[in-house]
Image (cartoon, rainbow, N blue to C red; front, side):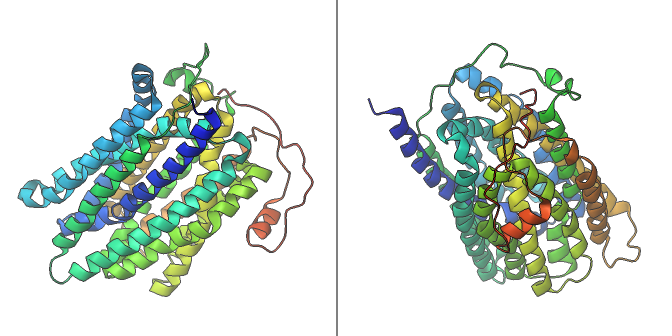
Amino acid sequence: MEPEEQQKKRSLRYSIKDGVFVSMMNGFTVDYLTPFLLLLGGTVKHVGIMSALPSLFASFIQLKSPDITERLRSRKLVVSTFILMQAVMLPPMVASYFLEEWRIASFIAVVTLFTAFGSLVMPAWGSLMTDLVEEGKRGEYFGWRNKTLGIVTILATFTAGFILHHFDKTGALIGFAVIFGLAFVFRLVSWSYVRKMHEPELVRKEGDYFTLLDFVSRYQTSNFLRFVTFVSAMKFSVNIASPFFAVLMLKNLKFDYMTFTVITVAATLASIITIRRWGVHADRVGNLKVLRSTSMLVAFIPLFWLFSHNPVYLFFVQVFSGFAWAGFNLSASNFIYDASSPGKRERCIAYYNFFGGLSLGAGAFVGGWLAWVLPTGFLEHRTMNLILLSAILRLAVAFFLPFRLKEVREVQKIRTHQLLFSMLGLRNLEARSAGGGNSKGTT
């Protein structure tokens, strides 16, 4: 029999190939769901609903993911099953165009299922991948992996944007049919690679099982639950405005599909360039330090949208956004892996995603409602009200919540400005190492 380490290395290679094709699928879908909804005749209210329902539904259904894994006794089987179910949702997206008065409702329903099946994959996938990647190198590995796949995503997003731009004048529906059809093929290929991966045996211990009620009842003593609260509050603050940036660009500012694509992709481009560097820094100074620093940067992003709507200016705003979000998202994911034991990890990821999904859904619902009732005021478009409100809430979250958290492993101490200078290449991290606190949470 092949040694375990060799099986792990081969599985990580298959994981990269899977990631390449799922990134191609994402590049052909994620940023174009709202534009297709607008093509169907959707309004800002429908955008809010489509942004909220998938997150809310996915958050509740994801709670069953660990139970499904325990029943099937295989994380890989759970991942491959729901990848296939997600792929099957892509063709009906285009078919919804022909349902006339039901086209908007059916499209939102299909997107909800598409998102839910993708979410059901994540707890089992996260648990499986952390068993395959060496603990001390997760920041570097996932940073490198996300950078590599980010390049694929940005190329795919540009390609999809070019296809839509080509068909814009002759028939946008054909363009969307092409990109969603190709996304379906890409997801099937990623499914084939997941099926080839090796699954290390997961040994569960007594006490690894805990209910959602057990989880939330330990807020006062659980460092991990306070972390979940912080990230969820940030997601709520972000999603009050996030779904409506596409509406602002396509409807209010009248950007064409290619301009929209270039501005949208700028954030992904910046993330690609910086994410591996964020991972290396997080391995040394701790994921919590990166989270605290980037949460402040993330809070200021919406304010930049208030000053100018020049496409070149917005491109550089998105570059800053990608830089900040790369560090925040990577360190948030890796903090979960550090703070949870293998037997509890899948359930921790599920509960983390549950509260994150609720927050995203609630934010989108609130944003959609406010978009209708808030007056324009001194701002040019109603959507700008949501952007300003999002900035205020993000600042409040970044200032008050992350400083109650503790790092869960020994890390090098460093000040925020030193971290940012090092990230920008203006100063190297000091070689010395200092204890960063080793206070584990309840998980």
